[in-house]
Amino acid sequence: MRLALALSLLAIPALAQDLMETAPGGVVRVLDRVSGAVSDIELANGQTATYGRIEISLGECRFPADNPSSDAFALLTIRNTGADAPVFEGWMIASSPALSALDHPRYDVWVLRCTSN
Image (cartoon, rainbow, N blue to C red; front, side, top):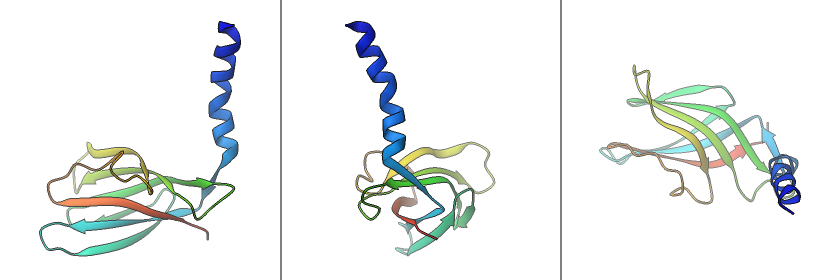
């Protein structure tokens, strides 16, 4: 029984990969809390953009294969400009931005969607 459970748990990541597709890029929204400015930034996978005093790098953007417009999952790395250590590194989910959020005194960043081209 335990072996069967362990084997079924090992199959879950493979199943999740079959249900998700990788997009060529994604769109993030940035809010500068000091100025109130809001900007949408389109990034290709592997691309980095500078906004104010932060650098946003998109590692990958994924979406559900059966419903591409339903959600987006983006692997982001966010650094203060000129810093080596990231202030955020991980997956952000468009439908649940508070689940894995950037904790920065000046900027809010969240994923809007994956791009299709």
